[in-house]
Image 1 (cartoon, rainbow, N blue to C red):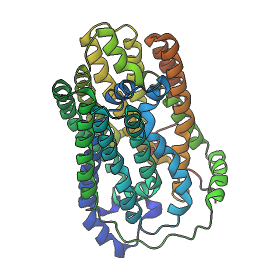
Image 2 (image 1 turned 120 degrees about the vertical axis):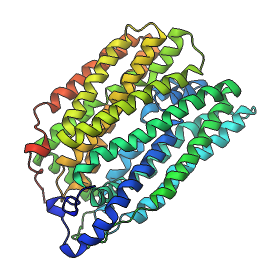
Image 3 (image 1 turned 45 degrees about the vertical axis):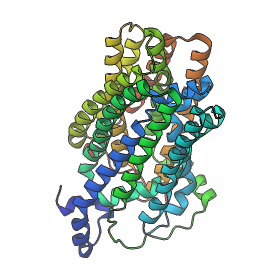
Image 4 (image 1 turned 90 degrees about the horizontal axis):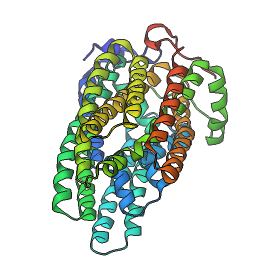
Length: 439
């Protein structure tokens, strides 16, 4: 850990009388945040949104569009809710109470989905299982998104700037180790149980890890700080201020445009595992192998992102992640063997998680202090148009052509656009001043 002078950005550094309390909590909060995040994401890995969930939706009779949306179901909630809560979070003095309450509703839907899957496996209505399985990540995301701004403010308050990239990466690494275990577990469960029973068991296991993560999170110690400056904006006032913030900060605007195009990875991702099963003639148990490969790659990507991100900042890590995804999309067009698809999923794990670490680290480094909550909400909303367009393209192409080549080409074009939009920006940690405040 760093010394106490690194705990706060210069513009938000607390008075000296509060330094002792923040220093006392710093190490504890780092490890609590690392472990609870790893356990949460590791639990969700048992329902892998890139491999298992698309097949699950397909087996339950979901449409091509629903399958295309599966990698984004949880993120949709995380992206929508922050804008609706930004005006309330801006008035908060303490962030833990809100995160504690919403954390319960993030986890319970997976237990409900498991129950409906067990009913469906016993000749119950599969439509209810389909609704529960698809709704679980959406409701979980909405609940988490409602407190996302508060959690991010809590993170900035508790975690030193130069430790955030490694924190994000190690959280992902823990989740990826659990994801590898999930891959072996899924392979065994698919062989021993009927398909719907297997998916129900995986939901129960996921719920167990989510419960563990919740109780670990309760160990967070939020430092006491002075009450925030008064904020009188309403929901409509906050939404109305967002365009002004974007116009006043061209660097932020370019970052947002890059994020929209970054959603291009969602064009090929939903159908890649389904295509591999069909192309190779493999049973559902093969999804476990692909999960293991993806998580091995994710560990490699996170280790690299942790080392490079803490030293060079988030932009380079983000660009490298996008570049790797372009390579795997091109390779998927021509892959014909199990070995190739395993390698592709290794690359996908490395690219996806390195990009997540890079994008989130970069975001925290370029946002202004005063408008941070509104900017976080804007950033979340910016993902939605890209996700919807990418999912629509993915579903339309797969439904009408079943062509992995067309999916790959569309992915490559959009990700190149994301890289080019972000390329002119210099690394914020080295040379960019904070974005202008607009109030």
